[in-house]
Image 1 (tube, one colour):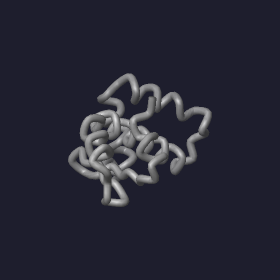
Image 2: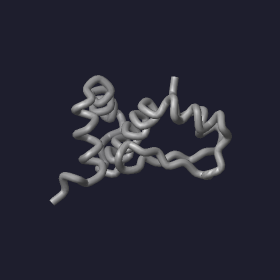
Image 3: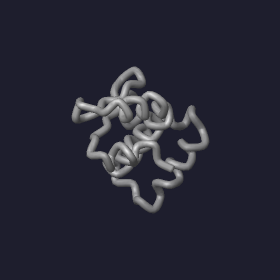
Image 4: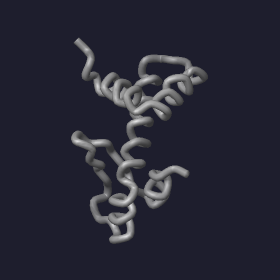
Length: 94
């Protein structure tokens, strides 16, 4: 089950920020939403990172039918996810 889906369905917009922080809009959250985010932070960050990589693959023009190759690798290998997140952020661009 997706950790971010209940938040999106509640009308919240999530953003991955530096230093493993999650930005949420609007800022006015219920206590239940704040607790949910705190309790599921690791999975929320992982899902946002995967979405960032997916967006990067789209930007590169990679065929959507091939996205699963990278995304499955990222799901199975934390080092691969970290590498592709850096690529998506442009941290390896010259």
